[in-house]
Image (cartoon, rainbow, N blue to C red):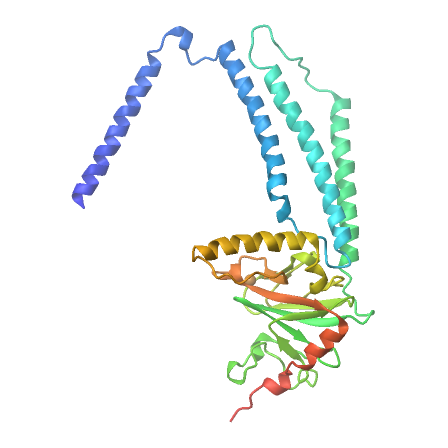
Amino acid sequence: MTTALTLIVLVLVGIAIWQMTKIFELSQLRNENSQIANDSDNKYQGYLLFAFLIFIYGITIFSFWKYGKMLLPEAASEHGADYDYLELVSYIIIFTVQTITQALLHYFGFKYRGKKGNKALFFADNDRLEFIWTIIPVIVLAGLILWGLYTWTNIMDVNDEDDPLIVELYAQQFNWSARYGGADNVLGGANVRMIDIDRANVLGLDESDTYAADDVIVKELHLPVGRKVNFKMRSQDVLHSAYMPHFRAQMNCVPGMTTEFSFTPITTTADMRQNPDIIDKVNRTNKIRAERAAKGEDNSDPWEFDYILLCNKICGKSHYNMQMKIIVETQEEYDAWIKTQRTFGQTITSVE
Ligand SMILES: [Cu+2]
């Protein structure tokens, strides 16, 4: 141990001496190599600035080309198209402005680099210019924000008037459960204080509530296509976030309260599997899997696309794997599936 420490100290002393000789060398340099930049240094720096501009444009174009296919396929919910359009317009505005301003910034940095007799025009202030470059962003940003608020209000339509399917999403470290209201489509009351593991009442349903008995708790979310779904979200422990990317839906799950989100799925899982983007993604993934399987690093089961519910809040160690499969199907398929599920009344175990 002492030997190791002595060695480290010796190495550090060596580095310090080497650094000191460098400083000494620099202070001894002749005048034309002085630390004060001359015209040729400034020219060199100016070209470097341009090289950096080309680099950021280049990496932007490269990322779009290389990783553009990672983007989500077309939205599978009714409101998804509005959401995507808002996002697209925001991106177009941001990219246009950033491309122009970066080009100007780097060009002027290059043009007015230190050079004898090369001086930029200087004026202390110009009210008209200031007004123009303040009012344009104000109008554009106010427009985007108002449009965003309007879109958000439309999306957050959680009223129960149009007979939505009511589904509870229950989050806990580190899994999801979904609960349906049963034949009456009404969820029984629930509270974490009523959780009783011994009796398999893991979601804390109120056993004295008559609405609870026919509730159906599942580990795979099935949704009939074309029917609005109102999600009621709860969390047992910490903040989670229910993220359903293909439906452009996300809402935090907060301990002690119920949050809501609603959407109407418009594309069944079977139809989404026919989407060219999805087919392309599946093919690429399976190619990689097959290559890995050949090396014995993966099993060779081909991957098949499914919608997914993910947790989008870093909620602990296994957060990355907190997910639930979502299946969107026809009303008939959904009815057939829900019939095979057992109700809370059937699964609860009585105390002996
Ligand atoms: Cu989580």
